[in-house]
Length: 310
Image (tube, rainbow, N blue to C red):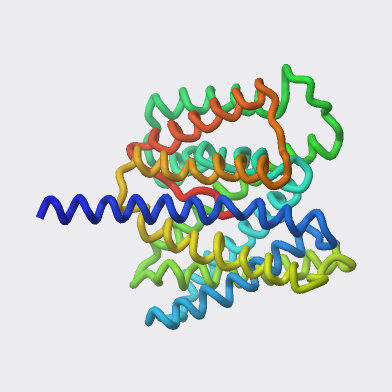
């Protein structure tokens, strides 16, 4: 019996790590499209609308109801709006500051999520959380280039700001999703909830993108369609399914380590595919920030939140 239980825990951890690997490619896919003829908001729209179709189809094939009670749907609408803000900021941050930088900055959502959960859900914060928060500030300061020979151009600083803003929006998104799951009645499946949230997010993204990126809205070729489909399938659908199904079954400290794969690998992919470089001080800042994020995830009475879906 213990052997079977240990095997299940190993399988859950492997599934969680697989999900983190999947979503680590999100920033790379975005940058592959963003250096071409598509705007960052338009990329987000097509990502979400394709992901929405995949999630609804997945829910139907898995035998889940795709109906959503109004009491939950209204929270899903709010979550969709917050996810729109998240992606609208994060996709721009990727193009302006780099895939690795934007992903690490967005991962600081763990600190905002903890603070919001303290006030809304009365979740207590441990001493480790406060150590992590201070360490995170130091790490981010080094990561963005303070003390290095980085040239702080306007676009770069805008990308850094948007990356941090992404974390703020995503923290609110996570809290709203949690609230929606605590409504009275039988909660919907996670896939159904994400499908509706993705749909509402896509609608808002579509309107905003047409208004701001009309000439960069449509995918220009088959290559763009292929990358968009991969973006909607791998990080948006498969990655989130793997994480959501395995996260509650894995111990907090192991979950925190597995989820760090996303920003670490995103940084590695950015170096491999786009020759994104970090100075020694920036690399130190990245390491300190990631360590702080890990402490932040396990510093909330053992609770671990999902990483940025981005």
